[in-house]
Image 1 (cartoon, one colour):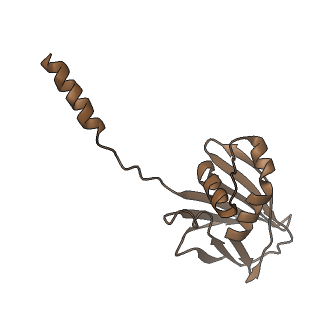
Image 2: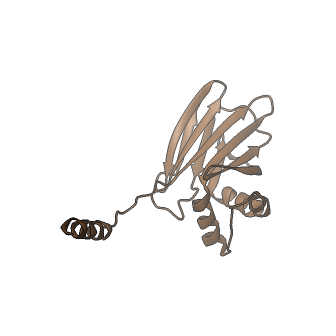
Image 3: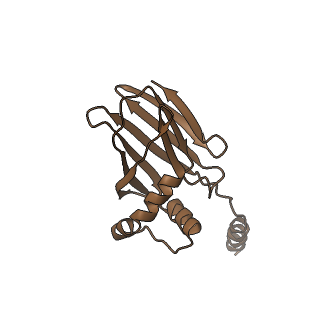
Length: 166
């Protein structure tokens, strides 16, 4: 009986403590220059739940991105958000891009983005504010590949822009 009471009080006592869960807010964007196609081929990965939250808040809608059809139905809003939050300049000139499509990969959305008519360059500037309007601790990793060289940057809310030279 003492053992049972002890276990009962132990379970109640331990269950009354709550652990504060700290979530990591992270996106990864890969930018690769294709000299043959004169284009930037961009792949951006964000967590599904975070992307839903930011689209809901920003556009005041009840958006779900849980199913393949949802990605197609909300492609325009996803593209609009990306164009507002991801800015690329080549040799100081802004580059326009468009969202080709997206897919699920575990708990992430993988977005395929392309910028056409991009001539060879030495300097690229990237500003990545994806999800920083919702999460102050958001970190956006950007990897840029040109020829065989890869350069990386870590962009955050107060340090959202960087330039690299090839």
